[in-house]
Each structure stands twice: as C-alpha cells, then as structure tokens.
Amino acid sequence: MKKQFKKHVALLMTASMAAVTLMGCGSAGKTSETTQVSQSAAETSVAGGGGESVTLRFSWWGSDSRHGALLDVIDAYQAKNPNVKIEAEYQGYDGYYEKIMTTLSSNTAPDIIQLNKEWLPDIQGAKHYLADLSTLPVDLSTLKDRLLEISGTYNGEANLFPCTVGGSPVVYVNTDFAKEFGIDLTKNYTWDQIAELGKAIHEKDSDDYLMTADADMLNRLFIQPYLVQKTGKPIIDEETYAPNFTEADATEAFQNILTLYESNALEPFGDAATFAGQMDQNTKWINKKIGMIVDYTGSAPKYLSSVDSPLEVIAAPVMENAKSTGVVYGGDRGFSINDNSAHKEEAAKFLDFLMNDADAIKIQKTAVGYCPTKHSEEILITEGAVDELQKNAIDLVAKDPYINNMISGNTELEVVRKDLIQEVIYGDVTPADAAKELLAQYEEILEQLKTK
Image 1 (cartoon, rainbow, N blue to C red):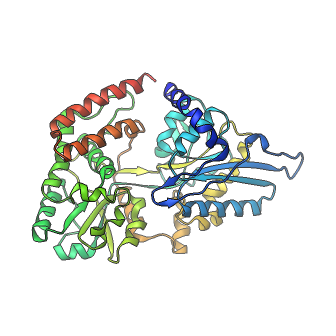
Image 2 (cartoon, one colour):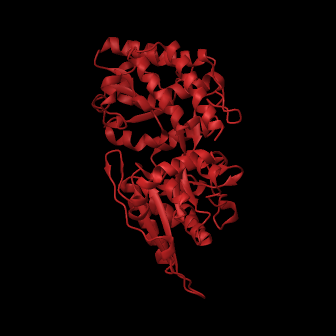
C-alpha cells in the first residue's frame, strides 16, 4: 500500500496544509461541527524533574454529542493529571481522512488519533506511523473477545484500540406494523420470503412497503452480505487480491435486489433516495407505512427516537443453503497513538483512561461508541445508559459472524458496486451485464492495488 499512500498524500498536500494548522471545519450528516486551533508538536513544553509538563494533541471526528463527551473526558483527565494538557482537534467526517494522511506524511500528526480500521493498510503499509499499543501502558485485555484481533491488529501488531463494537446487517422492525400485517418476528427469513411477504403487504395496502434502503444500504447491507452468504468468504481474498465470487454469484446478487423492487418489498428507490443517509427521517417509516429497515447495530438509537412505536431487532435475511450469515462483527473505528510522538507513554496513559477508567466510561456513555470492553457494558447497564434494542442487536450479530478483511472494504470497489446497483435498478443494465462489468472493473482495480 506504500505507493498508494504516497501518491494520495502528494495530491492532497497542497490543498490540505491549511487544514493541518487551522483544522478547518467539516460536517457529518446534518450536524454542524466545530474544530479547534491547535499548536504544533514543536510547541509542546516539557519541564524537567517531577511534575513534568506535557502537551498532547488528540484528533477525532464525529457529531456534537461525541465532541462534548470527549471534551468532558479530557477535562476529567486534566483534573487528575494537572501536569498534562490535551489539545482537542475535532471536526466532522468530511476531509478527516485526507487531513490525517497529510499530517502523518509530514510528521505533524497528533499524538492520539481516531482512525477507521479500514485505513490501517494504507497507513501502516506505507510506513510504521502507528505505535504498537501492546508495548505501551494501555490495558488491551479489557476488550471483548476477538475484538482486538478483528478490528485493531495489522501485521501482527495492536495498532488500534477499538472504541466501539457492533456489526451488520440487522433488521429493525416496527412492531405495530408487524402486528397489523401478521409478521412473525420469531422467524429467520430468507430473501425469497422477504420478497413474498413484501408483495403481500403492498397488495393489501399500496401505500405500504415492507422495507426501504438507500444506495449505500443496498451496497453494504444487501449485495455484500449476499455474496458472503453464497461463498462463505469475504468478497476479496486478501492474499491473492482476487474475488471470491463468480460472475454467476454476482448476477444472482444483483437479481435479488431487482426482485425486491419488482415485488414491491422495497420502497421505490427514487422515493427512498430523498432520505439517503438519514433513513430514520423517512416519512413513511415515521408514519408506520414501512415496517423494516436493514442497518447497522449502531443505528438503533436514531430509529428508536424516530417513531412512537416499540421496535424489535431480528436477524438479516439469508439465502437458502447459505454458507455464512453474511454478518460482520467487530469495531469499525478506534484510537491509535502516533509512533513519532515525543510522549507515547503519556499518550497511552490518557488512552487507557479514556477507554478503561470507570469515570471516563460514565462520562462518555455511548456517545463515542458502544461498549467495546467487558466492564464498560456492565457499568453502563447499571447506569441505565444502554438501550436494550442496541444490546439485543449486538448480541444478535455476535452469534455467528464471519471475519471480514480490510481489502473487501476498499472504497474504489464499493463505488463500482454502488454505481452498478443503481444502473440495475433503473434498468440501464441487466443483472448479468452488471455482474460482468463488476468483475471487469474489479480486476483492473485489484491489479493496481496488488502492485502498490
């Protein structure tokens, strides 16, 4: 991945240097974000002897609720450690990846950095930019079973402390809708049964649809799991950089999407697109005219707050004779320590406080992520800060997941798949032609990635 990282940084350097010093504002969804001006690492002051004064920079992205929680944790840590000053650098998701890539390359990166686990190959594959957390004073043993291995390890090193745990896909169900149409919520549905159920519901009331989805949902929560169910493997082999599925498999996956629309199990794509990225605000969902939404476990709070009906969560549909559930379990993001930091030990102590200290856990609740450690869940259940729906969703995905790999989540591959899904929906290409084009474009992209 080294060439890919250097090429990307070279293209971004000129445009992004202002962000390195000013930490410009970004946005995530509908939330207005703020950032703070930070000092460079060179401005860190250190006093000799006991009571050494240390300044750490801490960078993250998120919503206002995450910003507030982390700022409060920083205040709590500084109150207990008056010799440590932590400078917060925060923004929305837009532009964050590019900023971090640039600061790492230019050796101006913060001491503690929030990262997406999918970025580890680009970052650590280019250079050893991130510290091995197992060599620093941060307790990794508190993490839930397999979470560090699945979501925080690259090339045998612990480079990321996951700050959340969850998975996808799961199905959120409006129980009032389910009662109205006699939907059995104890049943594990196949894709064919979902199509039949959706057809029957729409025939009974033409304003009602069983499900809705935007392009990203169709891409990540319908097509990708379907291919994994078919093969029992991640969609790309991380050793050979070759697809684990055939043209026939891809044709079937595209056809499954088309069947869901043709049966009226899915709300028309154009109508759903109005609420892309914010399906909890879909008026049909709010008004109980849509009964189910396939999404991530982390989406439970927003669906709960969007309707006045009780919600339940059930397993995602599978195909007949599936070789896998197609369900991914793990943590999609976490915190790393800059290996070039002048204060790695102090940074690790703060990270340990952030993720393992009971007071810090109570401050954050689930604003930073859902309970990645065993004791955080125990603490927050006692505090009444964990919603039962989200806990049930996570228990569901933890039952029988498959272990995904990072190359399967490559952004270029996702863009190709998402574009072709929309072409199939609009009738511009057939599922068979889309499958052929998918593999042709994958071959080109994967060959480039393999040689970088």
